[in-house]
Length: 342
Image 1 (cartoon, rainbow, N blue to C red):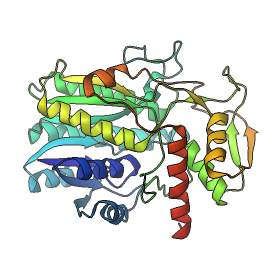
Image 2 (image 1 turned 90 degrees about the vertical axis):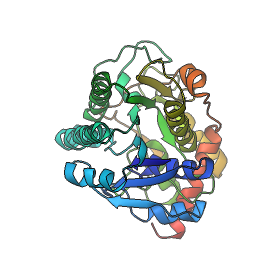
Image 3 (image 1 turned 180 degrees about the vertical axis):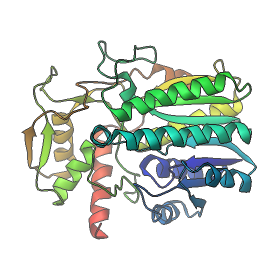
Image 4 (image 1 turned 120 degrees about the horizontal axis):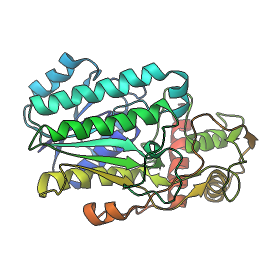
């Protein structure tokens, strides 16, 4: 069985390719335009798995180039669509870039799904669709508040696009996975988050400060209504996220689903503050971080963490890695990057 991963050279996409190779007999192909990744990722995948995969340098906004991949691979049976810009702050500064990339790329993938009759789609959504919530933990039925960033809005729009598309294309199926805050690296320390720009997420900020790439870590605000004043997030190991994508696609391909398009949260169910995350890193790395308290960052919500009962029930999924595992694997990856002068 052949599976297409979009954004396969990216952080979660590459980890999902590894998960597929190590735990299924599926054949994987990848599409990426390396706008925020590197073709070198595929050599790291081979280092871990011993396998080469077929990959294409294609911008999904270009429909004819995207269709050419499907024409060359008429036996694709499932798509996992990761490819998207994902930095909250950047989306606030450059909203049109996010609307152009995230929405148009998904639109073309959906066109190809129906044109080439691909039965199953996994859409990578985000907990950012919830906005600032009134009740925690959030369930899939929690009300979606006004989005706090253009990035979050593209994910809200994306879910609606998938839902509307599936309604009028009988026989096609999809799951939108709302995952929370992916962190960490492959347990080997050989593959992790590699951004071509300044990091936008907390854990890379932490590890880059610890290794000396950054002089100081800024904690964006300590005046939120949380236990220590800093933002609360549901951090989840990237390997657990990857595993859930594989389980979700297996579910669509092998089960009679109740809903042609379903939405499922992926999170640990545990809220962790920024300061708690810093403390966990300091414990596993035996390094003291240089950090300061700064102003709030535009686009950030105060607190969010998941109710993951639906994922446990439908996908038979539960996270295996704890916060210490996340921080230790992220630190291994940062040290690997340093050894290779990245």
